[in-house]
Length: 78
Image (cartoon, rainbow, N blue to C red; front, side):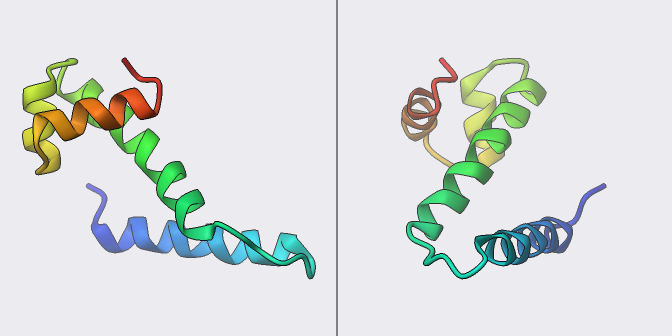
């Protein structure tokens, strides 16, 4: 089973690689980029594990069902 520190280490390595690959270019919008790229796969996996049930998925995520619906719509997952 994956632990939260495993996920944070994956994000850390990805960001280190991202900054290295910039090769001197100035980064912009890093915060939004990271959240967008982490949130979508998280929503996909949670929805799969909740068998598409948004109420169950919202409970798993610890968020309101309306918030989940908005996020699913934002990521074109509905």
